[in-house]
Image (cartoon, helix red, strand yellow):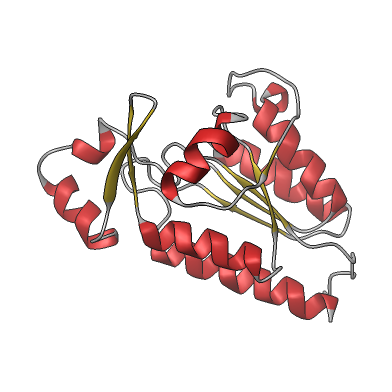
Length: 187
C-alpha cells in the first residue's frame, strides 16, 4: 500500500538520556558491557554539563545534525531536559538548535496513554510521518502510536535503544532509510 503524500517533513521526537547521552551508571558498567559499548561507539566523548556527566558518540551527533541540515526531518526534543536540551545539552555536545516538544501529560510512563511523551508521539502521528526514539518506550506504546499514525495514513518508525548503548549504527541506518523513503514519497 502506498502512503499518501503529506507535504510535511517527518518529525523526529528525540530523547536525550540513554539515546544520545549514555550517562553513568550505564556507561561505566564493568565487564562485557564496556567491550560492547566501545565496539558500538569506539570514539565516545565524556563531558560535563552543569555537574552532569555526559557520554556521547560524536557519530550520533553528526548524524542528527546531518539529517536535519539536509532537510530530511524536523527534530523536536522530547526529553525531560526540556528547554535545557536547547540551552545546555545541544551546545555542550555540538548539536544544532531544535524545538522542544511542549505536550502535557504525566511524567510517569505507565499507563502509556497518560505519558506526555506518548501524547507528543500521538500528535506527531496524526500530523505526518514520524520517528520516535526513546529508551522508555514499551511494546504497547510503540504499537499504539504506530497504529495511530496508520489510521491517518502516516508511517512511523519507533526505536527503543538499549540504555547501556543508546543509538547505534543499525538504528541510524533504519532512520536514514525511513527518511529517504519519506523524501521519495514526497517527490
